[in-house]
Length: 327
Image 1: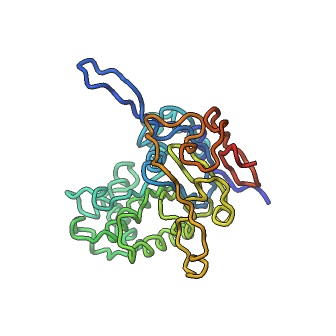
Image 2: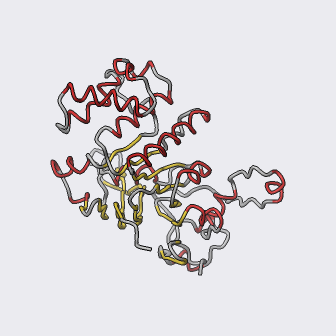
Image 3: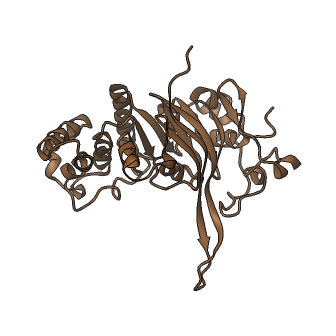
């Protein structure tokens, strides 16, 4: 079987936020290591799930990939071009091919603009349509995401959370992108609405051959929508593999603990299952542990874990793990 086409290649991506002292002469005294050297590929037409607990760097990674936050170092190669090296007009042109659906549908829409203006603005900014053509495309996009085209003249405050997120989806689709980063697009919505938005995303993916990076902490939803899953902990990817392989054979102790917390619908299986409770708190990304970042909470930690950072290596076909204890 031929290798699927790789649309995005992230290599050793780092994003550190400087920390300054409070004196008159501001001096950097440290850095928050939000994303601390992650590498992965995204294949055309797939959905790569990016999971981990709050504060692990998922959203920062998504924004750094799209250059909404400029990385400290590393490479983000999209369609053969390293985005980190681009500035100005060349970067603006590449941004047409990459879009983002934000987490909060209440904060991500301008309250002073109508829905039609919000969805049509990217078309006008990139000079892809006249005002009349943009209005026609807005009508088509609203229909595509399941909203009444007559809503174009309404303002965001007139819509529910689920409807606003559909507007966010329509805005992301307006430039006909090939890659969409979904930054926890359902976490702010009611449970009953979450499934509708996820089903909409899946339908649009099949219709337009879209590629998604789906950032979430809901592991059951990630299992439903993702092709492959990357597990993040404290700014680093600790495991990356096929969705079913991860859920049936997690190798990293952190991935095992995460998956043990996912409820199983069968009460008999659930009653017999052994939960893995991690002790302690997540260390500060400003001062992460030496060696393996997970070692302070890991039940398998050994001396080497404190001394040496584990390599992110392929231990099984297309199954990558960063752990000294996994052979």
